[in-house]
Length: 445
Image (tube, rainbow, N blue to C red; front, top):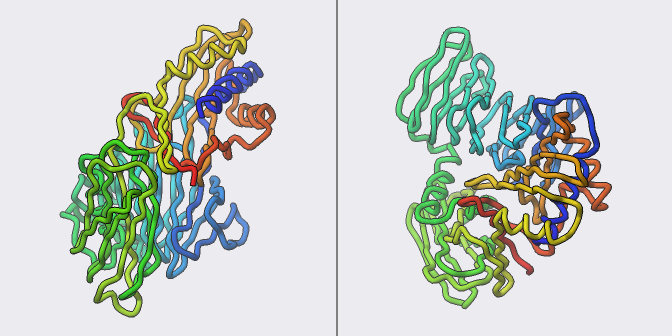
């Protein structure tokens, strides 16, 4: 894994010598589609919609839709994730990153349905807008939900941070724990406390996520959305953990009764029941954890979708650990610098920094001298479908901008593969940073 990252730095440094004087203040960012439950479709630009599967690329101008049973999500390379409930249509108008790898702006048009968005890396000047029929929600926080009814009525719920809902009639500020509404003609009302909604699938999901986030390491959480579960049925999921401390799981669902079971690698089983079942394994052994969700009673003919969240405690320090199929790697910027210097590849004065705390992905900024030429650049590194997705966000040589797409092409040519599909030698489940240490978790089985 360290070898892969070393090659990454060397290749990026080398390709930044390809000069290009066309200044580029920001970089187009594409998203990756995850289909949690079928079916979803995607329409590229003005083309017709077609069936979509996990891994499809979502670019500016594309529209993603779910049917009456579908659930999907679109993730940006910095870890920002927009989840789509069933019967939801969202057009991704634009998304850009700054050259330093931070989110610069995102614009969505939600035509119908529900979305839940968790925004990462919000910095001063960032713009994240969701447009409805007669109003726009502008984000100043990180967790929010948007509901668009058939008549165009727009309701915004804020779970974390602050949002502004504005239309031709004025604007209102919505704080965490509040919701506001825009009528089809743009009339605004609220804010009021978030009202209970039995049809909202994101409420139970947020509860489960919050339950496992308590006393665990940000970035270790993995979420799973199951198909509708009926009485007597069982679903199962897997979570890799290389050992050392604690693993916690929770399941959120609209109501009735479900049972949560977590089987540790040593065969011990831990159980939870109730409205929000939570189980915790202390002194958790290394290996692959299997999480079971059982439908007990009252789930009805249509069943209910369970939302499973799992998180753990990991040390924010250098590490190289494997156990019973689970892999845990921790790298500091200095370790990567040392590895590059030992490679004797013509780099000097090398400086690297990782984003200090990111729950999804890592921003790597670097500068130095390559064969006598000064350079600087940034990449966003994320885990996607078990591999590494490397997105250069631009570079600079002699004060001249190098477009990110040119860097992508040169990386692909140098390493002989798509930089959005780099295999480090094991299945990557999670990649995040904490205290400026980059953590990569995964499994060999």
